[in-house]
Length: 199
Image (cartoon, rainbow, N blue to C red; front, top):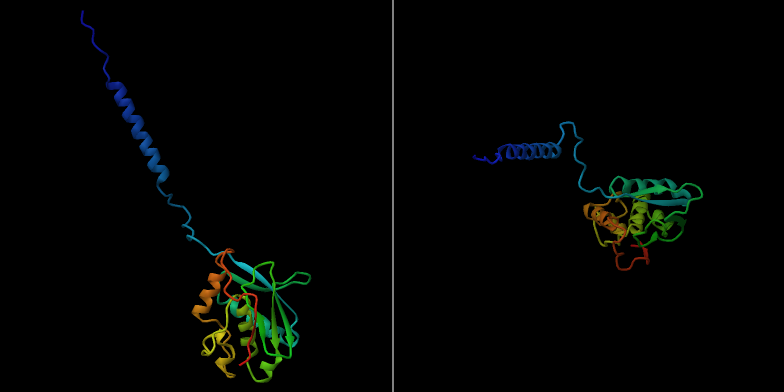
């Protein structure tokens, strides 16, 4: 009597069906859904909020607010906000009778620098909003760029008495963005010293 081996055909067919079904399931799970949300940008810069205290800025409070607004409209990862009552500010603004001057930053949350809004520059005719924005630029880590044109905020007094530009130029914006791209960014040489903006 002849014994026939059972055919391997049914088990091979079953295996092919299982493999095919697995591949279909895998391809379905990897395919993007038609209603999926658009992909998020690769990396958004975190925003660093720095508070300023204008309680000692006397007659220059509106210029300080305008200087902060100039920075807020120019950079994406730093926000300058007026400190509410009782909150310690990173940037203190004090009006006095000397030349404008400021501590070179970049100041970090929890740190503190000072801007002296000097009346001597105002008496000579320099624009108050440009002064405020320039001094805040020091707080954000920008040194003076003197001599320089009016288009450079950090050219300060060398931009001339008629200069009213309070906005940072492209390289100044990029430098501040870089200063606040990470908490680990090293402070520039001379950080912490006071820069006096006399002509």
